[in-house]
Length: 473
Ligand code: FUL
Image (cartoon, rainbow, N blue to C red; front, side):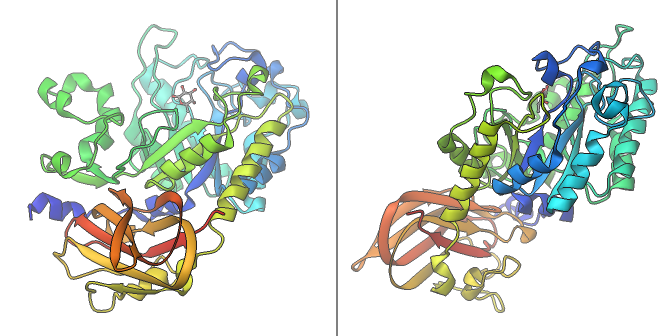
């Protein structure tokens, strides 16, 4: 086997990456002066007095997220307009100068507390691009300003699971382009919140490449290192040799981790994908979009493609001018949560017996149905193909199979087939490529007793930590 393929099988996630992956599904909340101007991007000259969420209720947000099955919430503490949802001591452009709670309120504090009380994780979005701040464009000065704000958010609001950066960058009032000092931002986060993942314009979680909820069929968490460094290097693109720059991968590329891709690479990293999209067309609230909340079918499709396709799902819900999630969004989130809970409530494989073509000592097939994702099955090292047979002990109706690799060991499966036994014959039910953290296989309902998973291509030594079999009927 090519040594790069073998090396790829040994690339593993960090604990902070694993934590976010296991959260699976969490909320994005876009809220700022744009909510009151009906815009998607503010100019930076909005009067703070327009920000007045008279019925603001962070508990309502958290309850709606939990009803959908979400395990965290990321708040836009400052968007591109520069308005701060917390009373930053470094600017006047904040809630402190809004009529809301007579300027004594702190949205970040209330949301972080509501998350903690509700038992979900809290994370922050802080836009480096700032269209209000005068020092923007004066690179060292603005970088210091940005780090000061980051420090406030990293120290005053408890544990954060994530710091989410996007790379939007513009010119400051001096006509100069701001150069962000990413390394210094990262260092501060690692120092003050070592468990927080740094997402998108950061080293821990990768943008999936679109904001429309399109998911890759084969989503790899092991990708070329150049992809991770790309966003930062773009800033300095003049310093990078043209030919080398052209060869670099971008988040939008279709294939980021197949054998063909990684064989040419000298360094690979664990860099899992996050699918981010909004429940409505816009990121911010617009009354004109009250009837444009994504359908249940569409949200289920994205959920299956992301959480069920080895990615995380970050779904945005924009609060309205009252400071509440709109009734239509709340209803849709509840429906989605009910659908997911109903579908996956009863695992038919929990009482099944499982056999495999071979197992490594101490890693038996039964580990795949013991309800514990820390235990797993695997064959001898160097094995690339294997067959796993599941006997449900009686005929049962099902239309979903959930497969999980033990990603703490790496991501290795490249191709698999699910089959059922019809008399003496095995017939194909579902064909897939990668599995990774989780693959949800969905097909028309069938009724059988024996199911077989054939791993037809893998890297070095495939692992499976969980097989779930479900009926949505
Ligand atoms: C983009 C921003 O420009 C949008 O306003 C939004 O915040 C989205 C999540 O990221 O880059």
